[in-house]
Image (cartoon, rainbow, N blue to C red; front, side):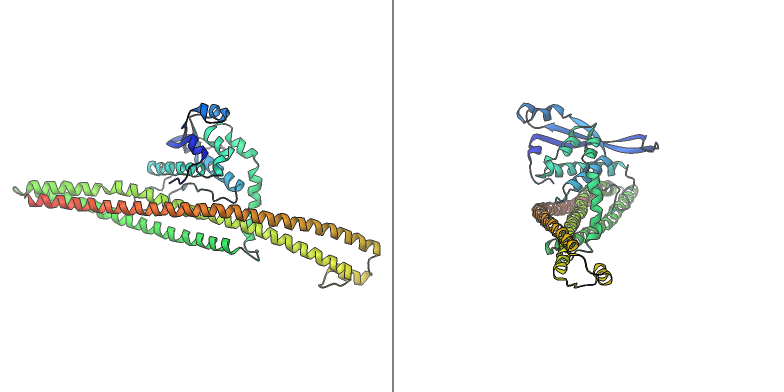
Amino acid sequence: MVERETDLLRKIEINVAEAEKRTGKNTVNIQETYTVYLIETRYVISKHNQGPQQLAQSAPDSLWRRYSEFELLRTYLLVTYPYIIIPPLPEKRAEFMWHKLSADNLDPDFVERRRVGLENFLLRVASHPILSTDKIFFRFLTEEKGWREAVLETGFQDKADSRLKSLSAMFRVKNPDTRFTALKQYSDELNTVVSHLLRVRARVADRLYGVYKVHGNYGRVFSEWSAIEKEMGDGLQSAGHHMDTYAASIDDILEEEEHYADQLKEYLFYTDAVRSICRKHELIQYELEMAAQDLAHKKQQKEELVTGTVRIFSLKGMTSKLFGQESQEQRESRLAALGQSIQEGEEMVKEKNKECQEFMQAAWEDIERFKEQKDKDLREALISYAIMQISMCKKGIQVWSNAKECFNKM
């Protein structure tokens, strides 16, 4: 469900072609079984006509990546582009399951759905006007060795540590931006409704699976009945075969349904990415408010020093009363220091205000882009799901119509 073309997608096609189970030792020397995914890149146009020659010459056709490497890439993008809604990865372990699905993350059906999800993630990033130009992302696609070292050399992990401050900043912001507050509330509500929708769908899948499979009993009974009839035997036997076909068809139907469920899950996970943008804005807003508060405090100190009036209780004020006033020289020295500090504070407020404004502008541009993408994708997914349900019902009608014809011929 990729919505737009970029220079990168005009140059190369990106596929996660297959998954492979492997066994090896992890970092603590323990044997483990894991899955790797084959990323294939193919140039759409002649390498001689596509631009910088080094890109064409350095790009291999395929390479293998583990899920943890996709996680590392996404974390790097999340930290490096805090104003962008970073596409989510497919689930690491199955959620919103119904009874027939395996909870094993090495289950072939689950691995196949994750393969599709990882390909969709790469195409989402490659279709983004800013993320698609990132050099680390391009190296992820084209360099099997040395990529991990390159991403760690960016120092993004140090920035990631500072992001932890945003977890508590939201509780201290005095003047939150109403647009981001509304966006966060919408994200929470979207998370809730999509979660409910997926739970309902899982319950329906459970019931539907049972209803279809129990139709196999019709097939068995009609077959047994046909054995004791002469004139009606062939008709009953044929009707039984139609019932068996109907009972078996639910496996493919629900497997197709899982792909639609995965599209909904993508937007369930997108809500976390939207909340991440809101948290980052709250942190920047908090830092701006703290800088403004610190500047106001310094200006008040200067005013008190100039006028000799102390507005609020302070340790320095009490000390002056106990041990006498400062000398003129000390007072002028403090005034000069405060003046310098106020100037630095004004620069800090100006810098933080600029950072906040730039973040809001860049973030809101990406939010508008995301909203357009979300509306289009979810509309298409729901329409496709409805069409699939209509097709399923038509097939059920056809089975019973065929059974009716069998009965008519008896």
